[in-house]
Image (cartoon, rainbow, N blue to C red; front, side):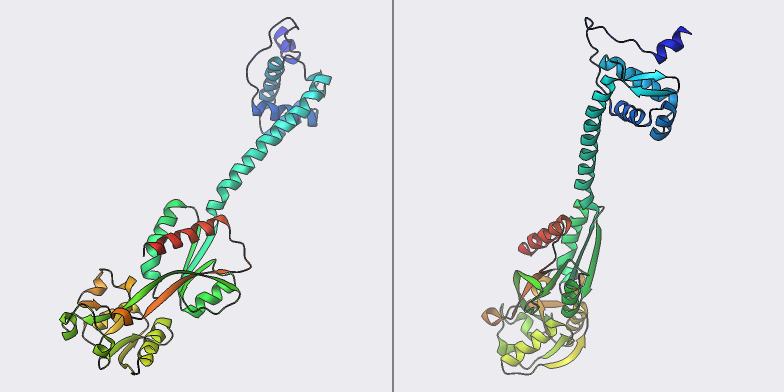
Length: 320
């Protein structure tokens, strides 16, 4: 009987007794505010998803720690004491601050799980994107990343339509709705079969060396294929095309088989299985070049995750 009475009517330190120094816990504040609002221990316990005895004991402990009664016990119902009403205001502020801090941390972390999308033209994506995307996915493993390969027109349209956050293409890009940021300029090298007489002629070739040669080119849907044909026409000759294909890897394979020569961007000349049997030569000062660029929509505000991806593209381009 005495134990029950002491559990329902806790005693507190007198004004001459030192107040306890145990820290107040957030769960105690949640149990207290729920009881203060429900004015019923049982309903407060249900709201907090704990047993009624656990909630009651937590509040009794809180009252002991504060050295003041927070509730007047009236059977199953309770009401706040003056000290309880004062403490309720402080408890709500503390819980509000704790919730705000929690939400802030969740928001700070949530951006890393967001979506980000990037597209690149087909003669760039296999060479430039893999190291960039490898770094990105390592830094942001929970990001929802979308990658797209397409022709220039497809990449431009996708960025304009908001289907892609970022695009990588080659200049010129004539689209006023896009911000066009140049990344780097690279040379196009002459790709020759390893047994071709020009392969051992000298370090650099001239345009005159390739005028009478057969060419293996990308088809006309590729901006690179158009660029090579334009380069030849600007130098007053029409290339003899023995093969057109949709893939740069196929161009290299056909060159290696002796079906002709081609002009290939520097990024595609690095050591790989596709370059077996091929020798690359520069045209020196007359060499054609292409400038790659990063595309964004002018009126869209990218999130932090997209900005991180864009920064990796810029950094990766500087080392390309």
